[in-house]
Amino acid sequence: MAFTRKTLARLGSNSSDAGALWMYTTPDTIATVNTADYFLGAIDEINLNDVIIAITSTGGTPVVTITYCNSNTGSAIDVVDGLTVTATDTD
Image 1 (cartoon, rainbow, N blue to C red):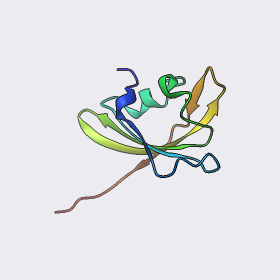
Image 2: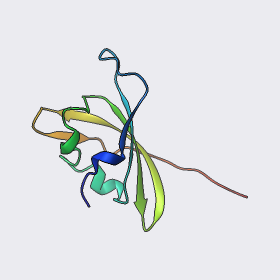
Image 3: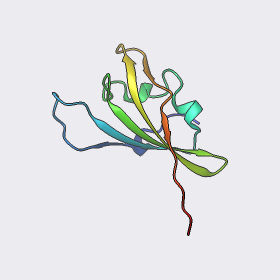
């Protein structure tokens, strides 16, 4: 799939002095999401070092990954591979 702007939400303050925290949900895998220019549709919103909590999917199972924007030139954007959050639900 492709980036869907309506499932990207900025969390917290709109202060230009602080980095932003975003939440993004997609049925895409994290390998797709962390591909260069995936977030091209939000290039004017996501800034360098903004953090993104990405809720992606692997075979229908949700996967939560924390990533951040490591490059935004105004015409190209990229995020790091990210750190997957693991959890155990024993009940």
